[in-house]
Image (cartoon, rainbow, N blue to C red; front, side, top):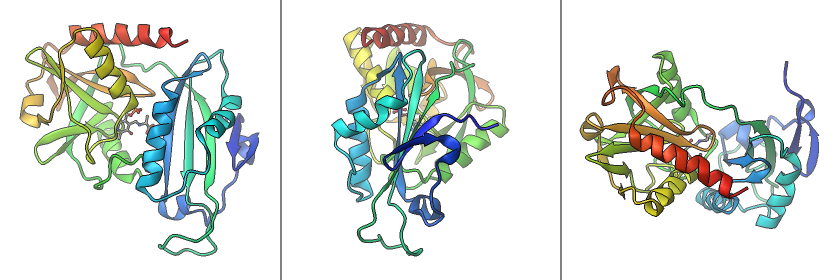
Length: 281
Ligand code: PDD
């Protein structure tokens, strides 16, 4: 049965089962919209300004005007939060409901704004690590935009699931770029590496936080392209995201990563990350 929590839709708070969008919504017809996923720990939105900055960049990337100021976004989202739990906000903005289906942008159509809040369920593979496969990245050229058009991502993720894995690591022109719904880190020759920001990856907020933590704690790290052949020899591989945090990958394409156990740098970083979260409460 569908959970009947309160959600936000176009200026109204209403039960989830009463939140309805037109079939002419451009999100439905074209996947014409962007989204954000923002964790909230004990009612505190994590790196909220960074998420809003990325939302602004995504909106600019698809030439859609931001319907709200940062203050308005905070006012809209706050009533959805419950300080007793760790949760995440899912926020979606589409180019609205046009009078007819036409690829070109409609004029003067208000955006559709939807937000809901869900529990963060601790990820089962955190302590033991997870398996991943590698796949050729078949997505589009603007992976820096957090677009709701996720067909490439979901097909890659499902391929991983079908093979008993938690994530697909995507390879483009011989370099690993990111996961189907995560960024990627690797420990190689004692250095923590993650691919640099570009159109090939979503600039993950978790990724940025990890880099800051590493720099503040003398963990040697570089933003550097990682050839897939080098990734195959890594001492540690992690995937990171707002909902799963930092997950060690212990098997890649059916071969163990190093000794097949979460590594020491992951243990250190995960502890630092959890401690950092608490400093913000
Ligand atoms: N996805 N890369 C991709 C393709 C992603 O979809 C995500 C997150 C990330 C990590 O970004 P962040 O650390 O800001 O969550 C990287 C979210 C969680 C989702 O689609 O549900």
